[in-house]
Length: 251
Image 1 (tube, rainbow, N blue to C red):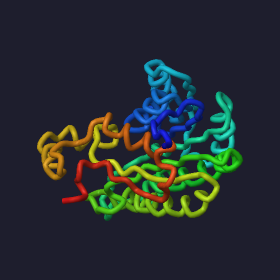
Image 2: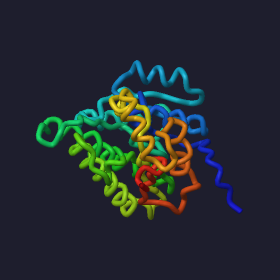
Image 3: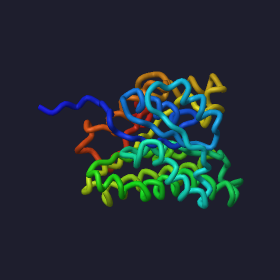
Image 4: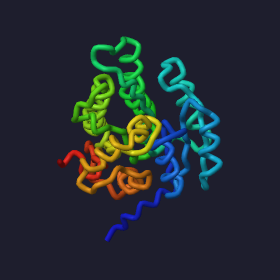
């Protein structure tokens, strides 16, 4: 019988958005599971803070992924510490929260660029080395708004709906080469992006009641699903979106 322990010893992982929120938690989870992890984000001070509190083999790359001119250099830099990644976690994201009537061209472009364009072109640049190894894992971050419309979320929802289809298209393109692509769709977790939600206790409590479980997410709730998608436990799972939302979308 095969062992499906989520041991990532010997694997190299790249996590975008590693300076805060679910990206930071994801980077720590993978490091705890034995992977050598490169965290990417704009803020070097926050990356340093993550690295100082995370045991294991870790490295950081400070880069603005939304700047297209930086991408080639960033790809070279992220492979310097440990070699080409086996695992890519696309956790970086932005939500401008502009109502539909107030969406600006700059806000739209910024949202689509970071949430949708960057995950594809970063993955495209890394799959060649994964293909040579015959093994790779891509984990995108979708959202409740991949399927539900929230007020002030038209650009964000469009980008995350795109992430869901992007994940399926990645699976179709690359899974025959041993590179599985899946996505996590978190419910409401306490992050920088959801700060306005959790600062409003009445609203936060109402969202918790909307779940089947009766509470909002905690950072530890993302660990198991992430490790499943990043390990051999998901060897026959690709092109899927897993809603880690306490049953929010079931009601």
